[in-house]
Length: 343
Ligand SMILES: NC(=O)c1ccc[n+]([C@@H]2O[C@H](COP(=O)([O-])OP(=O)(O)OC[C@H]3O[C@@H](n4cnc5c(N)ncnc54)[C@H](OP(=O)(O)O)[C@@H]3O)[C@@H](O)[C@H]2O)c1
Image 1 (cartoon, rainbow, N blue to C red):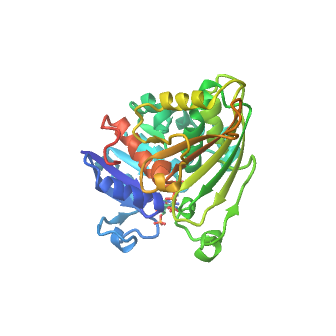
Image 2: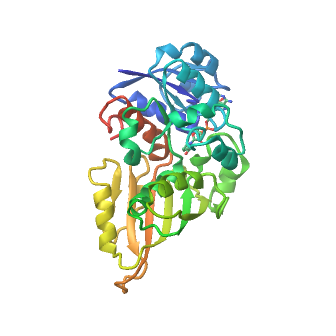
Image 3: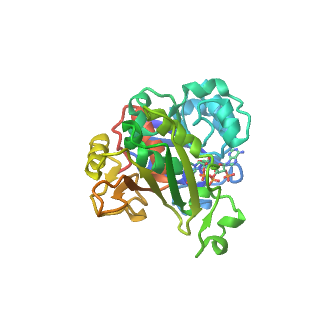
């Protein structure tokens, strides 16, 4: 049995992890933390029947030796000290925040506006996109779980990037359910503000998650860098992300070749659902699952030389976009069946 702790168990990703680990056949929860609800049982804070006591992060530091792995479900900026403390105690760290996703303190400062206080740890963290970094994850002790939007975009475009077929510009239009913003009350995420509304935010080349697209997709591309115009929207749904991506393939590349490329890249992947021609990936394909669904459509069905394609990728932001992917990473890092607890 893998002994696990969760820092930040009362948030949306934290409670999702509690549920996943509770039913995982080879993992057991040993402690869970909260700031505001420390001292209470979890069942007083969330609609679950389990009375796991919530402890403070400081108590968790003192009890680090009780666990093999800790999941950090904390706001970005708050994971750094926790990661350093648990790593120093020899505990595997799986961080769901953005604190260790980028490769340099400079990139972290540029996109997050914060000084990184443990830059020496950055090279030791493996970016936890399992379909891309599986072999590195098998030996990882420090893992940075990818962001929710970038998981759809990176999985949706990775085959094209790796083949050098992504071109120099991609336009991405993404929609996220409100749980993507976390459980802390903020005005744009209140029911009356979000319901029956749709709000674009940080559109263009602005959103922090572009850094992860550049990291994965430009990192995989054999040629020059691609520019990502990324427009996220707040969707009036509890969970789920749908990203629609507009790409121009090189001259002579056909829809059949693109479909074959995706099928070959993702052959045997347990959590990638490629839709057949004529079907579109929807939120229903993925919400409450650890899957990413991907569909491919030629812009002009009457033009056999059409080079413009529309890729749609969907996921559950709290599962494949966060806690499910985190468990998938744990399974790989601890030599378990990759799908354990996730099917
Ligand atoms: N939501 C998503 O879809 C999603 C997807 C991918 C990645 N992420 C990332 O995952 C992380 C967690 O997201 P979330 O949506 O679960 O956030 P959340 O709902 O706001 O929960 C945050 C958790 O962190 C705890 N916390 C807050 N400040 C803390 C501090 N200073 N010290 C210790 N604990 C603190 C909170 O404890 P109390 O409230 O109990 O005091 C709560 O348990 C974030 O970095 C987020 O960007 C989120």
